Image (cartoon, rainbow, N blue to C red; front, side, top):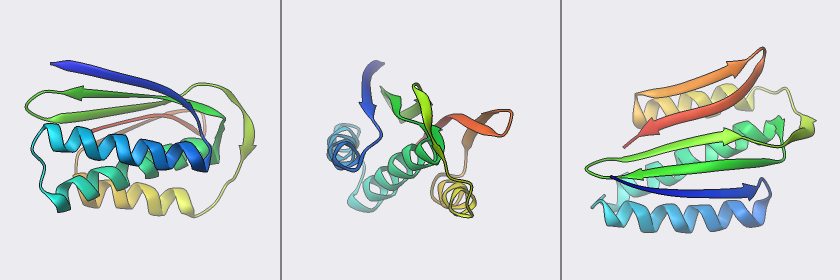
Length: 117
Protein backbone atom coordinates (compact mmCIF):
# COMPACT_ATOMS: atom_id res chain seq x y z
CA UNK A 1 0.00 0.00 0.00
CA UNK A 2 1.26 3.46 -0.89
CA UNK A 3 0.54 6.71 0.95
CA UNK A 4 0.14 10.20 -0.47
CA UNK A 5 0.01 13.06 2.06
CA UNK A 6 -0.81 16.70 1.43
CA UNK A 7 -1.08 19.59 3.88
CA UNK A 8 -2.98 22.56 2.52
CA UNK A 9 -4.79 25.77 3.44
CA UNK A 10 -8.57 25.42 3.37
CA UNK A 11 -9.19 27.99 0.65
CA UNK A 12 -11.04 27.72 -2.64
CA UNK A 13 -7.96 27.65 -4.83
CA UNK A 14 -6.54 24.63 -3.03
CA UNK A 15 -9.85 22.77 -2.99
CA UNK A 16 -9.82 22.82 -6.79
CA UNK A 17 -6.28 21.43 -6.81
CA UNK A 18 -7.29 18.67 -4.40
CA UNK A 19 -10.19 17.66 -6.67
CA UNK A 20 -7.79 17.31 -9.60
CA UNK A 21 -5.29 15.33 -7.52
CA UNK A 22 -8.07 13.08 -6.19
CA UNK A 23 -9.23 12.41 -9.75
CA UNK A 24 -5.73 11.26 -10.69
CA UNK A 25 -5.54 8.93 -7.69
CA UNK A 26 -8.98 7.52 -8.53
CA UNK A 27 -7.65 6.73 -11.98
CA UNK A 28 -4.69 4.85 -10.46
CA UNK A 29 -7.02 2.46 -8.62
CA UNK A 30 -9.28 2.00 -11.65
CA UNK A 31 -12.41 3.87 -10.57
CA UNK A 32 -14.95 4.50 -13.30
CA UNK A 33 -15.96 8.12 -13.99
CA UNK A 34 -19.01 8.08 -11.70
CA UNK A 35 -17.19 6.50 -8.76
CA UNK A 36 -14.29 8.94 -9.16
CA UNK A 37 -16.70 11.88 -9.16
CA UNK A 38 -18.39 10.59 -5.99
CA UNK A 39 -15.00 10.21 -4.29
CA UNK A 40 -13.93 13.73 -5.32
CA UNK A 41 -17.18 15.12 -3.91
CA UNK A 42 -16.55 13.30 -0.62
CA UNK A 43 -13.01 14.67 -0.31
CA UNK A 44 -14.22 18.21 -1.01
CA UNK A 45 -17.17 17.96 1.39
CA UNK A 46 -14.87 16.62 4.13
CA UNK A 47 -12.56 19.60 3.74
CA UNK A 48 -15.51 21.99 3.80
CA UNK A 49 -16.73 20.41 7.04
CA UNK A 50 -13.31 21.03 8.61
CA UNK A 51 -13.31 24.60 7.34
CA UNK A 52 -16.77 25.25 8.81
CA UNK A 53 -15.47 23.79 12.09
CA UNK A 54 -12.83 26.50 12.33
CA UNK A 55 -9.76 24.91 10.76
CA UNK A 56 -7.47 26.99 8.53
CA UNK A 57 -5.38 24.07 7.25
CA UNK A 58 -5.81 20.31 6.91
CA UNK A 59 -3.84 17.16 6.20
CA UNK A 60 -5.17 14.78 3.58
CA UNK A 61 -3.72 11.29 3.53
CA UNK A 62 -4.63 8.99 0.68
CA UNK A 63 -3.93 5.24 0.98
CA UNK A 64 -3.57 3.66 -2.43
CA UNK A 65 -3.91 -0.10 -2.78
CA UNK A 66 -6.79 -2.35 -3.78
CA UNK A 67 -9.03 0.41 -2.43
CA UNK A 68 -8.53 4.14 -2.19
CA UNK A 69 -8.68 5.42 1.38
CA UNK A 70 -8.84 9.02 2.49
CA UNK A 71 -8.24 10.58 5.89
CA UNK A 72 -8.70 14.33 6.36
CA UNK A 73 -7.54 15.91 9.61
CA UNK A 74 -8.00 19.51 10.72
CA UNK A 75 -4.61 21.00 11.62
CA UNK A 76 -4.48 24.74 12.26
CA UNK A 77 -7.44 25.97 14.26
CA UNK A 78 -8.41 29.60 14.64
CA UNK A 79 -10.79 30.13 11.76
CA UNK A 80 -14.39 31.17 12.08
CA UNK A 81 -16.74 28.41 13.20
CA UNK A 82 -19.81 28.50 11.00
CA UNK A 83 -22.56 26.55 12.70
CA UNK A 84 -24.97 25.70 9.97
CA UNK A 85 -27.21 23.07 8.50
CA UNK A 86 -24.57 22.57 5.79
CA UNK A 87 -22.56 20.14 7.95
CA UNK A 88 -25.59 17.85 8.24
CA UNK A 89 -26.07 17.94 4.48
CA UNK A 90 -22.36 17.20 3.92
CA UNK A 91 -22.46 14.26 6.36
CA UNK A 92 -25.57 12.85 4.70
CA UNK A 93 -23.91 13.18 1.30
CA UNK A 94 -20.76 11.37 2.48
CA UNK A 95 -22.82 8.51 3.89
CA UNK A 96 -25.04 8.28 0.81
CA UNK A 97 -22.09 8.17 -1.59
CA UNK A 98 -19.71 5.93 0.36
CA UNK A 99 -21.67 4.28 3.16
CA UNK A 100 -18.86 3.66 5.66
CA UNK A 101 -17.60 7.03 6.86
CA UNK A 102 -15.88 7.67 10.20
CA UNK A 103 -16.33 11.17 11.63
CA UNK A 104 -14.38 12.03 14.80
CA UNK A 105 -15.36 14.96 16.99
CA UNK A 106 -13.63 16.64 19.90
CA UNK A 107 -16.38 18.32 21.84
CA UNK A 108 -18.70 19.84 19.26
CA UNK A 109 -15.97 20.17 16.65
CA UNK A 110 -15.33 17.70 13.80
CA UNK A 111 -11.57 17.09 13.71
CA UNK A 112 -11.13 14.17 11.29
CA UNK A 113 -13.02 12.22 8.66
CA UNK A 114 -12.01 8.88 7.14
CA UNK A 115 -13.52 6.82 4.32
CA UNK A 116 -12.70 4.30 1.59
CA UNK A 117 -13.94 3.80 -1.92
